[in-house]
Length: 240
Image 1 (cartoon, rainbow, N blue to C red):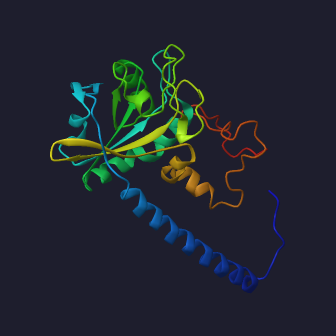
Image 2 (image 1 turned 30 degrees about the vertical axis):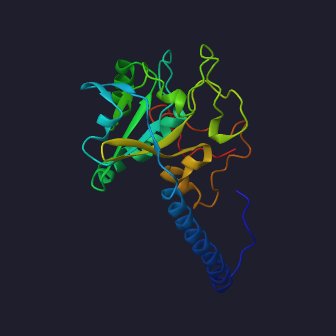
């Protein structure tokens, strides 16, 4: 850790109050962005997507579960993979226990992946999660919402995160939001990449720690992330 110059409590307080004003500006800006996000136009979903679930096949509309809003986390888990993505698992650890609260605000949240339902269920039990996880193996859902780019589907050319057209990894993470109004399902918003940071509580806590995320020295930013049952016991190891 590179320690800043030591100051008195009074000097610290002055610097902290200055930072607090910047934080308040960021909060107000974030609130405004949230309002703009909610004002995005709604697009009717015209395809009849069908997902494999523990209760049999369900359409996208049926995933709402008698609510008017639906969030779908696109969890990276390809059809041939033996386990879910460690980074998506990092995110799932954050939102799993929050879903019960979303339900009391008229929001259903599920995860969707292209892996077979049985494999999703086995991994979910291993991780100890409680959220509903559906299989999009037989649907174009993940292709159409810009998170799946398998080599055997060269016609899938959508850019990831609205960027320059390119073929990213086979599976990428994202969150898509939908509304159900007068019997019609609408797509309202999707976010990807750093747009997902806001609902990872571990990262939000790290951002408030003295070292922050401390990832710049790593070969890849998230090389330190493991599934929660794969960390070594030496959790107090010195960071590189």
